Length: 171
Image 1 (cartoon, rainbow, N blue to C red):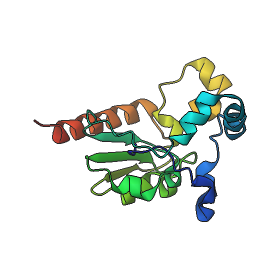
Image 2 (image 1 turned 135 degrees about the vertical axis):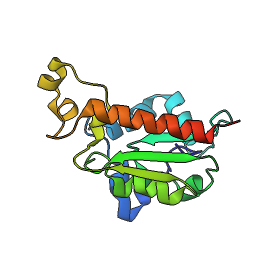
Image 3 (image 1 turned 90 degrees about the vertical axis):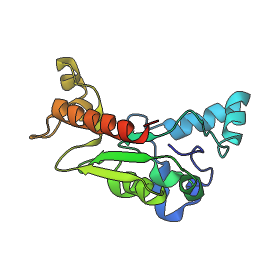
Image 4 (image 1 turned 60 degrees about the horizontal axis):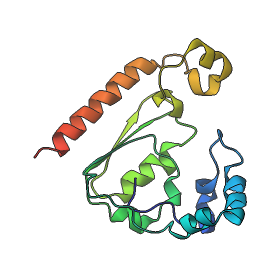
């Protein structure tokens, strides 16, 4: 989302250590990256470039859905974003709560627009419509709270994205 990757100073942000916590789907991610960095020169070289700019001039607008790792992005990097940004998140997102993630991005990126979908709309509602097998085997990803209509939310958010890009990418 930003011009640079996550801040290498992430563990040093005392009030936001959760910004470096791995997602629940990959609880051992940090340990795996550290182990790989010890044994793989290419991974070490990539980590050394973590603060570099990855700005791509072809990207002219950003529509972010339920962004995570908010406080792991350097504020100066987010402040340097000069293209239109719209962010959508669910009020019930517990994996990447709006307060430390979507709201942080919106507050840090000049002119960014934030839409928080009301109710129990969670992080994983933005994943594809689940199969019966997924609902049985991965309920934390595939079963939404009562009153949350995943298909309707997908339709609504797709409409928001179309509207955003139509407005911002006029030539």
